[in-house]
Image: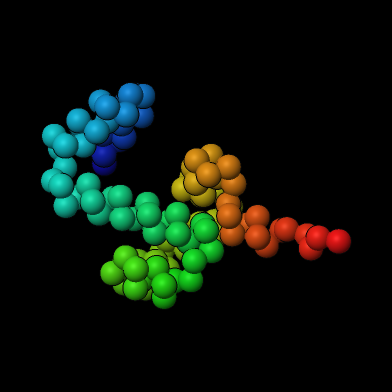
Length: 103
């Protein structure tokens, strides 16, 4: 577990996207980088309110993986949800649910 904590600390200290991209290229295979990007894309799609079956079809991934992402986004203290809100200005799905009818 110490080595995981060490890697997390190193990642947290990198504030330059170019440096992070280079580090990813040095320690991960292209397939591993794509897998991380795919997982983040599925979280974005869930946050946008896109149905799980449509996500599975479009991304070619299992419903189990998507359900896991959905559960993460429903947690009150979800870091993923907070980061999605920061990058998109708020949850699209949440905005749709909380929007009051005009008139």
